[in-house]
Image 1 (cartoon, rainbow, N blue to C red):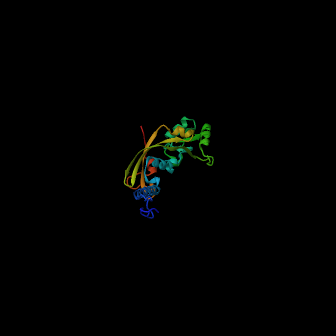
Image 2: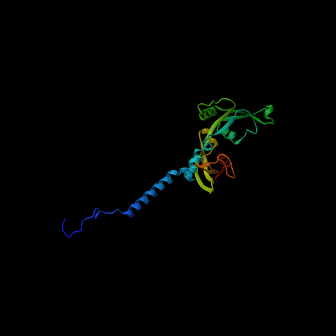
Image 3: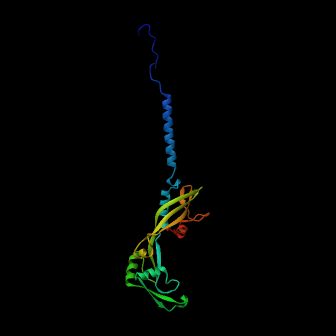
Amino acid sequence: MMWGQPPRLSGQGEARPNCHGLNMRMRITFTIALATLLLTSCSPRDFLTRRLASDLISASSELKTPQRFVLRTGIVASKDYPSPEYLVLQHHAWISANPAPCPRDLAPPPCWDILVTPSGVDAVRAAMPADQGGGGSLLAIPVARRELVGVNGIAKQGTFADVDFTWRWLPLNEIGAALYSGDVHYKSVVGFRNYDDGWRMIEGVPRSVQSMDDALKNAEPIP
């Protein structure tokens, strides 16, 4: 040690920690952690978007259940024939209808004897599921199902919402194509409710909103 120089104290000349920068990094880390916690605690069903409404409507059993046409063969009353569906089938030569005496339980006359033609047998056989028999005087033929076209708008009021959507018939076979046109669009409104686990379609009919089943039954064709 040279004379005239003050002794060097321990720690002298070493860099001191930057407290301001450390606090800033801690704030950023806390903000990121808080944002991550908030995002992970939210469910995609917490926000009723058009995408969520479309997914829930498309997945509903009411929309996916096939529409069946019940074809009654044999002697039928005038209230069943001529109906538009029977006239369409007769126009395609799938059935024939001839005047017939009315049984007591079908009076008053006229009555009709409905028969499935050979070409009608082929059309019905192609439309019926493989595990479903085609015998008997009543044939429940799956002909079409509903297909969502799009969600038109969402009107929210508190924990309830009305979803306006458009759908159309999607024929499943040749008979369905003759009875249901896929070119006609229908408009329906279904009710949603925000539960503790997110938005769901309403099963019952509380207040003035409609269930999915009622929404489809009360659909209006779009001109």
